[in-house]
Amino acid sequence: MELYGRILLYAMPAFLVLVLLEKGYGWITGRDTVRTMDMLSSLSSGITFLVKEVLGLSVTILSYGWMVQHFAVFHVESTVLTFIITYFVLDFQAYWTHRWSHEINILWNEHAIHHSSEDYNLACALRTTISNFVNLFTFFLLPAAILGVPPSVIAIIAPIRLFAQFWYHTEWIKKMGILESFLITPSHHRVHHAINPEYLNRNYGQILIIWDKMFSTFQEELPHVQPVYGITRPAQTWNPIKINFQHLGLLSADAWRTSNWWDKMRIWFMPTGWRPADVAEKYPVRKIEDVYHFTKYNPLTSGMLKTWTWIQFGWAFTLVLYFFGNIARIGSPNMFYYGGFILLSIYAYTELMDRNPYALAWEIAKNAIGIGIICYLGDWFGSDAFLPGLGYAIVAYFVISTVVTAWLVMREMKPCREKTNEMKAEPVPASRIV
Image (cartoon, rainbow, N blue to C red; front, side):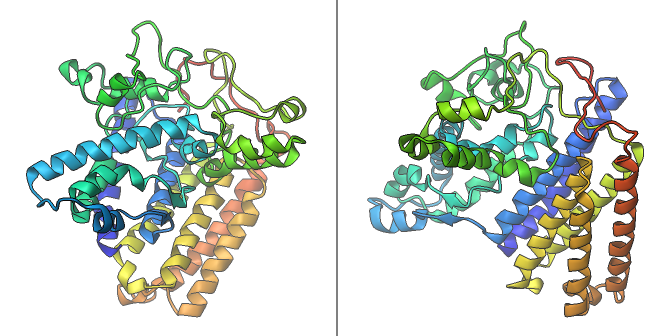
């Protein structure tokens, strides 16, 4: 856990720099593919995922180490060939888990966050789930376990594969020649993120495209069909924590409301999007029917709100860097309190991004808890060891944050302004809103 945190201590700033470079390049060239609030939502989603991962808030029903111990017929050494075979095995597993997450109702809840951005850029790659508390698919690693591939090899390859999926989330890289025949490229993955009828539910591979070609789920990006991004039941929020559980909330509500007991049981395992007939008729859900004429989520946002959101994100980002760099010093159970505080911070400022008047209540709660932590511990989780008196500065931030958020809520929610959920019209694919 501590090693993982230290790796992320360097990876996170690198990802942030690359995201900002992409936005800067778009701004310079006059074709910005990165809307500011969408980017901040994506970056915030990445933080929630990393905090959950570092804290280990998930359960594996069948561990790989157990399978090696009980099923290994051979025991192979950690050679280059072993790493190559492991890479293929993990990619095969990833293809099927990814495909099922698109095809089965309950599994879509884990994956919807990744597709929730209505733009396609490096930032949206960071939209990763925090709702997968149980890992059901380790059994796909059974072939590797039978061959006796060491768990340490899996532990090295898995994070490398995760980071390797970042680069192809961009519109700037077009077709890549011979690489298109066997690798997932930006072109292939643009198809996967698109909701055009021609592209929907295609290209599930994560590193290799060979599985899609093998199992008939491959679709080439067509020159005459520009990809339109998002999900057909749009999230309509910048809050990544809400997005993570939206689909689960809908499934739960539908299962409760339907009068058919068979539907109550099977709804979880039906194809993604399926709803009981009686519920679908009585409780319709907005769905994009014409992907070429809809309005992207884009609440009216003042320059002041954008500036304050950057400040709040910067605060959350700094909290995470300190957390990952000092997780051993913070220790248990304090690290879980720290992680919970980060999630609460993100929830509060993304509610303000949505121009939700309840954002002030969340902000007050967050800052009150923060001050309470400092009063209880005497500083901010050992921060005075690095900079004496830092705890007082953090308390001052909490007070200022409450005041500024209260002012913004009153300013942004004035009755003379447009309603909170009203959006600027942005027909797709029209010019971007920055």
